[in-house]
Image (cartoon, rainbow, N blue to C red):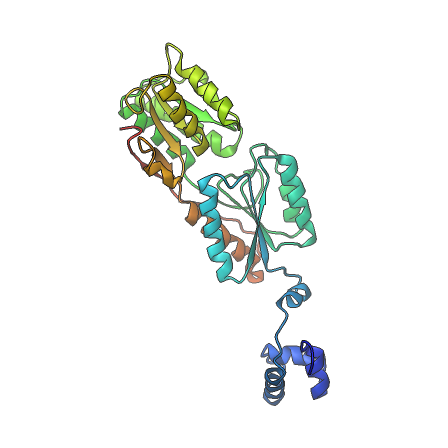
Amino acid sequence: MKGTTTLKDIAQRLGLSIATVSRALQDSYEIGAATKKKVVQLAKELNYQPNPYASSLRRRVSKTIAVVLPEVADSFFSLAINGIESVALEKGYHVLIYLTHESLVREKAILSEFKSGRVDGILISVSEETANGSHIREIIEAGVPVVFFDRVCDEVDASQVVTNDYECGRIAALHLAQQGCKRISYLCTSPALHISKKRMDGYREGLREAGLPFRETDIIVCGSSLTENSRLVEKILRKKNRPDGFIASVEKLTTPVYLSCPRLGLQIPEDVKLLSFTNLQAALILSPPLSTITQPAFEMGATAASLLFKSLDKKKRHGYNERVMINSVLIPRGSTQ
């Protein structure tokens, strides 16, 4: 027989219905053993290959999940994607990556595309502009399950995988204080984000426990430009009452400190100590090596994917949402010691 063999071809050869052939190939209990044997034997002879895409369409399943991220330049998200894919591949699913570039408008547009069933489920870490979760609730109401990881939107009732951000902010401040810092500044890009608020609250508590004053002016809001951020850090370091310690809430804010200190004749860690929330492997080879709060990125991605597949299991679709917290770890290195 020329061309690709179809269920229809097998059905015509055996005088059976297409539905009967399909069920026989799926080893359905509804089909007798003799009929199954004939169907399977002929399918092998004709080199029949099932079409998984067509099968998915009939079941209204795409065998695809979406991962919506603010960026991939951050090492956390790169490792989290690896964790997600490790679970998805095991389940026979494809993973599509979508970037919002920290834009709420783009995030809404991306999620809107999924209402038609283009993907079976969504893993999302929200943009820095996402304060209201109405667009996320809409996609859930359309029947597409959503799981948050890292950056969450607490007003949306959905499963989430996070780390102990409050405790990490506290530990970061206490560590710098224990290393002799008297004025610790906190560098951030999006103070309104839930994750940023948690870390900042922990930072304030750490200062309080260390007996150090908290000043609103020590919260330094940076942008996306390395040049502008470097100018801002240099301006702060030129002040008479400059900070002697920095906590970078995201890894890209460590670069301005490493670049600015030599320009001003300051040394890390003798004059300025630096600690960052990051999974950056290059932290080990920086000069001096960077002290970090290291997140369990791979594990968080894999756990989020597992929660999503649990919600995709029809037998378990009962509306129960889980919150999983996986602790991060302080790794002291040369930039603080």
